[in-house]
Length: 474
Image (cartoon, rainbow, N blue to C red):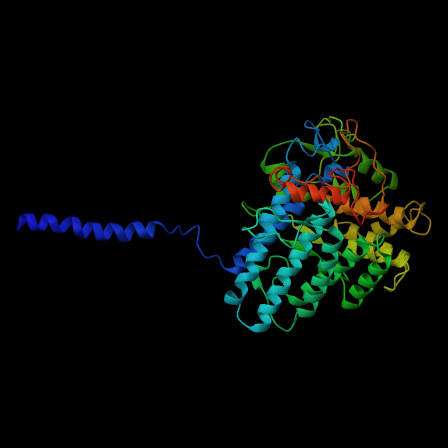
């Protein structure tokens, strides 16, 4: 009996252990099946972090556009983008962390979202975010993998012609706008930007369409005119209440990436750049105290581009924008009004005058940063600011003020500066190249996707930071 009992015990525990070991294979913190809503939220967060970041390994455009200057490590201020693999990291962030999540979101929507109209809305909103992401890839690199991208079974995707991709994105955006039904819901609370409000997403899509249209205006005026006018008829942003913002939280891990880079890190890597502080001081711009802290002398000053700059001597980014819960802006009313001002100046039928839209843009920017209507009125009376009296072409007037307004959105500032060619930035003291009008392709692509990389490099005119992309005609 004793022997039988002993023999029974191991069998019992063997069965029990087999069950327990099987359950241990399931990690509750890493579920095998992720709902589409979680993927969608994560993609929004990753996208917002990437376009907002000030990390020198990822997003260096505040330095390139001479909004900020580095204090000690000067590579990026001097256009060195390869000592750290910046093209690789930015490429991976958009392809892997954003686009791939959005594609997986689309696949899961039919099983996760109830209601035919709700599913259509969810798919359309997800695709709008894809179009937004592709826009930054195409305007940054040129020809990119597109038609064969996001397929894990294809390690060597071909590169598609940038113009072809861009025009296809416009077609997709039109289809998304048509598909949206404001009478039905979409993502609800999983949508951090608009809380699932479909009418807001429709306005966002038209506003982004306006932006995409004006981006190609120098390259294809007829196409740009048709796109811009169609977008305005569809309904674009009419106030800052329409702004597309990603709301961060006051405690980690979902905090403002600028707070992470400048405050949580405890580092002192950036000060204001003299280019923007000199410009704003000359114009008596009321936003300067909202953009920067005062320097050691109680004034506003910045370090010269590319030069080592004493952290204690110069102005620093304002405390407000380094708060952990400071929201990221993905698309705004002030830039929309600048786009409308340019559209009028180009002869497009969008209503209003160039001066009125320009004034609306400047006023909206000042109000957004905490200034008043009175501040804006006084500023616009400055002959060097007033649209009717400021020197230069419409590109110089709009370009300069748009550059100032996009201060905390360096990537957009870089796109607009390349397109409008204003302001004309000074060369950094130790520049390793000409002003970069694109990023080079990732090293990984050069080493792994060799044949397609070589074809793409030849097609665009050489894999160099000085190679102009199709829309950057002048």
